[in-house]
Image (cartoon, rainbow, N blue to C red; front, side):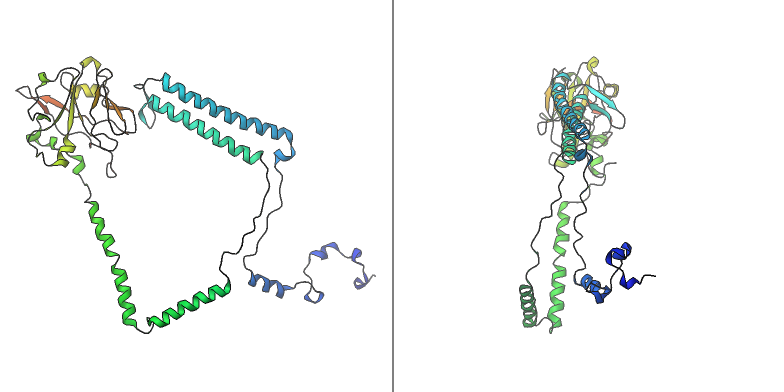
Length: 362
């Protein structure tokens, strides 16, 4: 039997190479490994072995990836062209009915789909290009230590401790406690000034002066006189407010401001709008549903009402529906009728809050 101590290195079991060697043979033992781990608990694990991509070793896969990237860029270009075509080919007044979204402007929807597809395909093509065809090389960049040199750190600590000692704050608890109390109370003004943001709106934005019987009559905003139905001609527009409200109450005046437009009854597309009007006279809130600007630019030929702030456009023949711009919902309509003297009056308050949406709106 061969003595294992007399075996040459070639005769030894290869698995023995993977076993830990004793500390007596010059190799690091368990004690030395433990000391090294304590000295550097976050040792650099290094980079993993580089694994070539399929496109690096297979030219057919590389050509396929190239065609995919080119296809995405081509789709992006076609979508951009489609955006331009939609601008000229789709009428501004056309609308679509989509599940979960309801009625949306067809041109605005086409703009979003085509431009979104163009940007998505452009970005997806660039990412696919970088991940499959560009050089795939890992690089480790060496950085200098971010912490200050040890002498500077020790000097800073010494100066801080010297300042604490010279201030006497550790030996004088009365000063320390009063200082902490003053700093704590200093935060109170930040809480108090939040009151300047105003009270919560509660139900104030859901109700206007039109809800009160004594304020139902429509008054011409320019002349202050009640408005007769026969005084509103086809194609004209009047601004009005409720009778009897305080002109100095700007909040109530803003919420209750309305505009009157007289249309040919056959031009009205929305049945509810026709029912809530009187012989083609319809009444809508004057406050834009985007950010609350006063709308008032009326185009007789298209029956569109434009907000001058951000160009939100509403169709006066279709329930005040948004046909262009950033406004998210239609102008609220006020149901009107005439009294025994032929003057226009409101049947009640708006069916929904006027103005832009707010966080408490259900």
